[in-house]
Length: 249
Image (cartoon, rainbow, N blue to C red; front, top):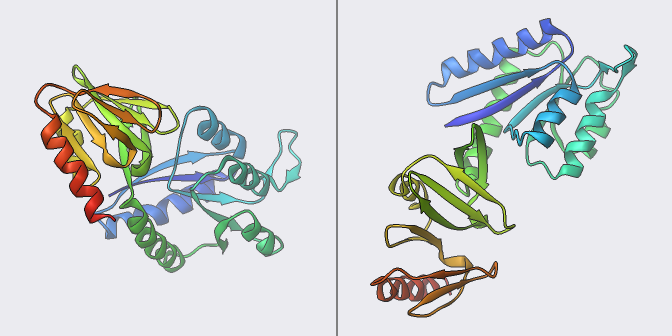
């Protein structure tokens, strides 16, 4: 399993130490692929998340980092507040030499407050717990590479997927969409573990949860879109739709 991990600290030596601890953990867990990105300011990290759709699973962030004028400011806490208002699901771990902001850290949804120097045992305990928790959560998400970046999509938000040559277009409930370079068969293999997804002809994968109504000619979706059914697919889709809703009450 792949995990995107962001390290944010203004001191290179601290970034090195944390990255070394994470690499040690990764070496002991070869089933995990830890993709680590380093940031020397909170502003740089926030820019990547807000403007470049960077969505790390975990952030290890120092609370105390200097501001642009070189003065000491609690910029990690301010960044955490921004993440909270963004609705970020990223798990945030504060790294600091002070316990002063421990209670406030939990107010901004930080999941752990680690006092420096952080030891291998401490990192191991934290990652063991939250990797296991994330594994449970990920059963409801998929990770895909779209236009040069890794995107995590909630399965429930995927309305349908449409083949466009060698590219697949994934349409979401919020009317957003992503293009992924893979075959429709490869994409369906990723989604087939979720009972709500069915293959419709050679061009579509549909999420049955988002179908409002179905006729022999078209599918009406809950995002107001309509899909014209490929020839010969209605009977099979009707049975799948009926069976799914019978089994799910």
